[in-house]
Image (cartoon, rainbow, N blue to C red; front, top):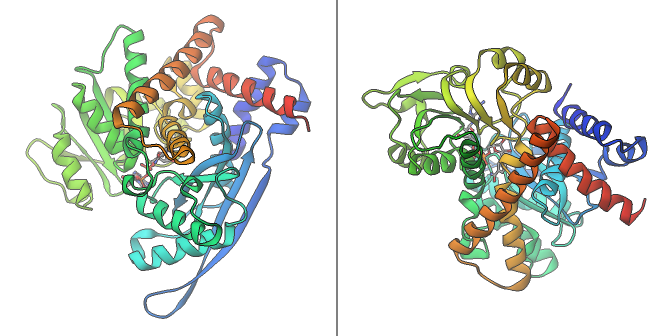
Length: 411
Ligand code: NAD
C-alpha cells in the first residue's frame, strides 16, 4: 500500500462505519487535478538543469485548496497525491474553509545555491500560475521550504497577476506573513499533547519526550515541550540523533540547529549518539515523529516503547503499524489532527491578507489554541462514545464535513 492508498484506506474505513455508500466514496477518493510541470533553470556554472514540479489538488468542496510545497529529491507523484488528500481531511478536522492540495519540486536543496533555489521557485510559479491563486489554491511551506521561498512565490505570482499576498502563506512577517505562523505546527502538536496527557491524568511537566526531525515542526515542538517542563530525552535530524537520559539542553540545540549544523557534529557532556531508528523505540512517555512519512513500519511498531505517539509529520505511520499500535494499546494522535496547527495559522494569515489586517501573536495563539482544542474535543468525544481509535474518529469527523459539502454543492 503506498501512502495515497493508505489515506484512502482510512477514508473507506470511515465511510463504511458511517454507511455513506459507494457514491460518496467514488466522489472523494480521486483527485480533482494533477499539474505536473518541468522546471528548466540555468545552474550557476551555466549548465541547464531540468527538475520535475508538482501541484496536485485533491478536493475543493469546502473551499479553495490549500497545502504545502516540499523540495525533496525523492518526491514523486504518489507522495504528492497522498499529501494532497491528507490536506483535505486535515482542513476539515479543524474546520477551516479550505480543501486539500500539495506540491513540490524533486530536488536536493542542500546541493543548490540560494540563487538556483530562487530560479527554481520562480520558474515553478510561472508554470503553475494559472492553477494557484487566493481563491483557487494557496501553497505554504513544507519540508525544505521556508518563509524566503514563500516570499519568492508571492513576488513571482504578483508580477504576473498584480499584488496578491493571499496567494501563499508562511511568508515572512515583514512581507504580509502572520505572527505565530513559524511556530504554529509545533504549537498545535504541543497543544494536543497537553490535552491528551491532561485527559489521562498526566502532564507534560516532567514527561519524557523523543522527537524525530528538528526542522520547522520538530524544533518548535521541542522548545514548547521544554518550556512546559518536559524532559526532551532524544532528538534527531537527517544526520542521526542525540540523547540524554536527564534531558537535552534544548535552547543550546536550537542555537546549534539555527547555525545550519547537523547533530552528527554535536558534542556535549552526558549526550550520546543514537540512530533515527533507535530514537523511535526509546522508552518515553511521548514520541513525536516530525520528519518524513513511513518511518513507523510494522517492525518498528512492535518495538516502540512510548505511551502515546503524536504524529507531527505527515503519514509517519503505515497502516500495518497502526494495527500493531492498536493491538498493543498505544494511542496514536493522527497527523490530520496533531499537525493541523500549521494550516490553521495559514488560514489566519490568508484571512489577515484578504482584510489587510495584522493580528498580534497573542491573538493568533489564542485563536489557534481554541481551534485545536475544539477539534481535539470533538474527536475525543467520538473515541469515547463509539470506542474508536483516534485516527478512525478523526477521519469520520473529516469525511462527514467534506461529504456534506460535496453533496450540498452537487456533482
Ligand atoms: P523541515 O524541512 O523544516 O525539517 C525536516 C527535519 O527532518 C529536518 O530536521 C531534517 O534534518 C529531518 N530529516 C529529513 N530527513 C530525515 C530522515 N530521513 N530521518 C530523520 N530526519 C530527517 O520540515 P518541516 O516543515 O519541519 O516538516 C516536517 C514534517 O512535518 C513533514 O512530514 C511535513 O509534511 C510535516 N508538516 C509540516 C508543516 C509545516 O508547517 N512546516 C505542517 C504540517 C505538517
